[in-house]
Length: 603
Ligand SMILES: Nc1nc2c(ncn2[C@@H]2O[C@H](COP(=O)(O)OP(=O)(O)OP(=O)(O)O)[C@@H](O)[C@H]2O)c(=O)[nH]1
Image (cartoon, rainbow, N blue to C red; front, side, top):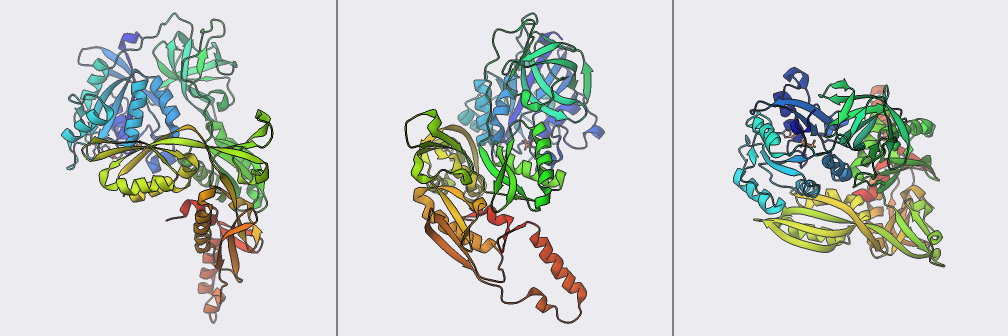
């Protein structure tokens, strides 16, 4: 197609501001889908996405739109994931577009995630069209939303398009704006091929499917391609576009977006942000912005039943096929047996994987407390060989061999209302934060910028932020450096025995308090046994805190006098149910919650 009639755009929005609903409306208006086909929101494909109402994977759809100027345009809508864990993928999706709709909920206003994504779009040079959604709601405040867009995002909002994605009111105006305000793609059809990968996934029937935007040149079925980050070559077997039904095509020319299937076996080969070129006429350089994304958060995954270990390995392997940003390697724990150390982009990513393992593969899992990767400089000469990276507390080196430790640090932007500032500042200070900036952005809205150790964020930061702000705070963060910090390993002893899977890495100055809170929480979580159980927190050989779970006095069945067998069975079933997620360590049954107690401290 002549690039003059192509428009590539994304929708950026805070979670729940209506991105999926709006996408559906656009598909409906352009006749891409009939109402009956719509059923559910089509862009959110996975069940889990639908249930949680969040977009995890980016997709793209091609719509044909006959504009009021009489021309038919090819509109490629590129969906972007809506969560901080996936901001690199968002940035690559945006790099595939010339424009973006910035959707803001008229009853909520601009949130931190809106801002973060808007900045990403601005820095990618995109034309941004502000859209004010949910104007059907009684609480919608269009003038205030416009003012916020101007003050916080810094975009003129006089011409913002006010719509209701739900009722369809004024949505067509968005399509006209896309056609007239977003510039057509600029690539050269006769230049060497450069195509940007912005998503890929594994399909059990077709193999790896890659979504790409052709920037320069042409991509053809049957052609040999080379991935510029790793030099590997593959042959393109088929190509298509999603309308959103897959439709086969044979070429994608400069400016177009589509998917292809090649002789690629492993999604790990198709990294988001990588450039595809033609080995017989290669591009001089890759497209800018490629990063090899790494896991930031790590946790151990174990099966409750040790015989399910093989099934877990298989399930992890299957998930990995579809998710190059997730990693796992075998580990073993004295307490839990054989399991896997898994790496995730963030906590949401971890929860998603865990839920999929349980739901799709029917596994009962024990997850250990999430942590981050530390860079430990050992004593002795300064050299690379004296630095170890540790993300598993059980591999923590002997403290006498440690010179100093570096921990990953993030820059967090928190957007809230002034009435919650006090609580939030206390929280970020508790979490070892350092203030970078504090400003009023519009009216009583405050933007707080802090540097915080990632380790504190992965614990319970998000939940606590929500509770101190009663939900009126939004958070966006990115990794921004390392701090040298005196971290120590804290062991938890149950009945005098250290349980390796319960160990956590904490800051030395907070160790005493954390230890106390942790054993206190564990005392609540570990059910009473037939005997007394001591729970202790220790650093090295020094006990910093102790609690005791007292013994059960009576047998539960003693209550079931006589022959009431059904009652007895009910009780036993109940006990069994409760036992499902327990792991017997020594003589003590420890429930899943206790392994995640560090996440719950302070609740
Ligand atoms: N009243 C009203 N509700 C809307 C409108 N648009 C969306 N909603 C509702 O807002 C909620 C969130 O909408 P979604 O479209 O799922 O939000 P989203 O931005 O795609 O969410 P993520 O995929 O998590 O980013 C849903 O319950 C929608 O029905 C609107 O114009 N008016």
